[in-house]
Image (cartoon, rainbow, N blue to C red; front, side, top):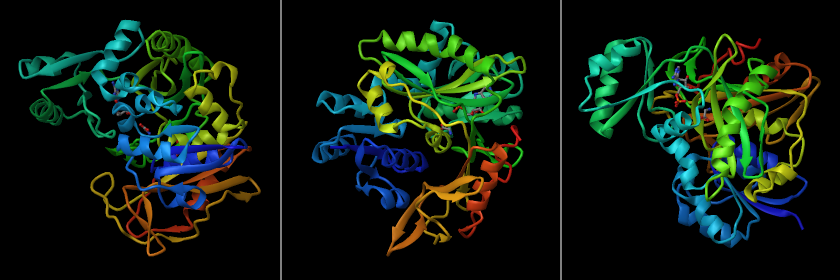
Length: 423
Ligand code: AMP
Ligand code: GLY
């Protein structure tokens, strides 16, 4: 009999994981909690919030699942994987202590410094700090990070000294402290590493587009589009990142009393000499990076995730398609500020991959729901159009934008330049 899997979360990342699991030959049934209108078309949704640890554990028990795949960081930080493992249910995603690598930027920085992993220098600022002296130590641009889970919105990078100072002061007021980081110049890339105590494997590297507007300007977002593989991560860069960043982390995490089992998302900054350093760690798959990474895995996704959850990845290494993927996010009016929700989504939104001469495309749902049988927007990032092509990144891009052109949502916006650094 095939496996039953529960995916925790309800964004585009979870829709991509659910699609990959539905396509896994070893899987019989896929459940998603809470899911979205896209996951409802291919799996069974359950109205349990992703951060409701007790609710998710109860659901996993009731369904008798063989595996839980945790999408977002909040339930990991709150101990969902610990609770599942305690009752014998394999969970993809680290235990609460491992999740602190994302839960606290200060903690993550200390681990990197202890292990000699290349990363930006940091100053801790509190009420007692001479802010003028601190802020002039490295000068512009200023990188200020609150040490809280803020969904990518707790960071300000600015060349405006007053803006930096204001954010520092308000953060110290609300949190008691804030981090001021050295600015790293270069090009960013995302390395998603599947990891357990038996081994690790880096998936094809991708590049996200964090700023809201074309040309990488405007406010930071959760991510407006991504593509993979990202050519900025050459073989040499990849080897260096693995040697200097991933291997020491793997040794460290595997030596803990409870090993890390899940995805370690390494946010890389690659300087002009090709030297990688760490901008951030996340303890989960990226969103929208997952939408362009899962389709590039050619082996059974469930076999891979379950192997990691059970600590036997070394014996179950994945294989990959030699192809290109691009995803373009359609955001609601107002995003990344408070989004307008509840609008009708119209046009051609098929639940399946649409084959074309150059490849295939589909819509990954994120902030979507059903109201009286009609598809409506329910969040800031509403959906993403994803194209896959064996020919070229250009073809994947054409497919993604062709797919997106068929969707209608009043007031929505998207970036027309996804992939501009590679094309
Ligand atoms: P984080 O949440 O730490 O990933 O920061 C959000 C974004 O801010 C990153 O994706 C980078 O674009 C930018 N950023 C963060 N830290 C630095 C840094 N030290 N130097 C340059 N840019 C940074
Ligand atoms: N796309 C950035 C993230 O998932 O954190």
